[in-house]
Amino acid sequence: MLDTRFPLWYPFQEIDAIEFKVDKVDEIERLIEERKNLYNGEIDDYKFKKSSYETEEEFLDRISVDRKAYTILKMGVAQDPKLTAWFVEVEGDLFIDRLRNAKWEVKAKIFDDLFPIDKFYKNWMYLDDLSDLLGEDLKEKFNIVDEETRLKVKSRFKSFEHPSFGLQKVIGINFRYASYLVRTRKSKLYRGWVIDTVDRLMTTVKKRYEHLLREELKGYAERIETEAPGPIKRLAAKINEILKQSIRVGREIDFSHYEFEGEIDDNLLLFPPCIQDLMSIMKNVGYLKHHNRFQLGLFLKHLGMDVEEQMLYWYNFAVDNLNISYEEFEKNVGYTIRHLYGLEGKKVDYKMMSCGTIQSTGNYYCRFQDMNIDNINDKIKEYLTSLPGQEQAIKLPMAQEIQPLVAKGNPSEACGKFLEMTHGLEHHAIIHPLQYLERAAKVSDRVKKRNDEQSEEEITDD
Ligand code: SF4
Image (cartoon, rainbow, N blue to C red; front, side, top):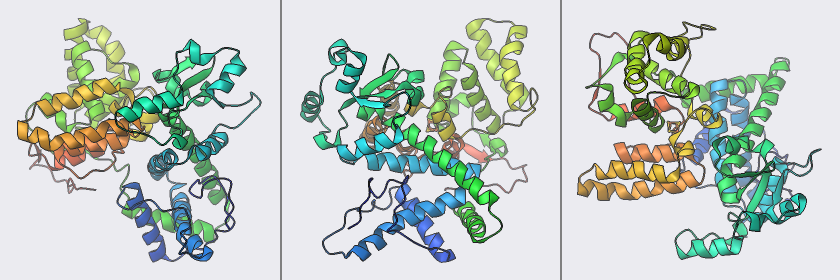
């Protein structure tokens, strides 16, 4: 009988019983394809329990596919920053899905591994233990209801969760491991501890997992790099080549060859939700914080705006709302804009950041991660009420799927669902803001390729 400390799907463990050798190209391609389907939800996740009809050997054979595919992808992406970003994002989503559906005992074991005891003591704790450590009754202090009460309240409404899943338990995570939540103030921060339900802390758990995965990939890349030319290096290069052909990530999409009908504001619905929101703040307030300015500025650059056009775009709003002089504007916003075209500072021609970067860097903005859920619902409602009655009824079920994805800490999935609802496109998690625009533009008659351009580029679906 296979004996492991963690569930078989937990990747940060060696499983001796599962040994494999994969070097045939068609087998590698098949494993990659299957993993991609798993990420996209096109196939069901593996059943990690041995069925009574299986022999131990058959079971190991079946389960080893999960481990093989993970390892192959790890080898192929480790030395490729763009593929690494993609891999961390899709693996992060898969991990959190599996963790959510795991029993509480399994979750607790994995938390022990992700937030290990160190010289500062434990880094995650049950609320009662944390109360003992801090010498205060935190339940009373913050009026926290216990798990059973939460479950009772929940079950009266909709998503009743089996108690053993433990999603309604309240725990504390040391803030050193939850800096994201501290920055966005989504949970209670008290005396160095972030306190909330396991359900709401899943985003923190995911970020911690992604951090460790990135570290593991870094170590892996160094190992491959320092290895003398040999079978591992050759295999890693081969897998990378296959991945580059089958996964289109980080491809710079240049919209300067395309014409958008009307003014920029008439095309808002084609833009990713994060950009729609930043544009709306800019329009109404006339000012954005530095990183948000950078995010919107980069998007506008990729949309085909040159420096002068952008300067005018920003200046109009800044003048309308803040009534500042052109000199003041030049000093602040103007510098940022020239900077992102490589005309200031280190003279780097910056590329648009991916959703993974936006979501993991607290200063950037993702609607489905950083906006309050009530406001997200308002945005969805606003969109639905702009439609004729019959269309509203058709789109309502899709709209209802967005909130649970946000609550689960799956912003990219929620964004894909929003795109599905607004543009009738097949659901895919969104991993890049330009991917969102590209997919929306493909089905919109508001976007045309300029006749005078020689570019061979076409907007194609993923
Ligand atoms: Fe923007 Fe990406 Fe978030 Fe969508 S998932 S709102 S494109 S950052």
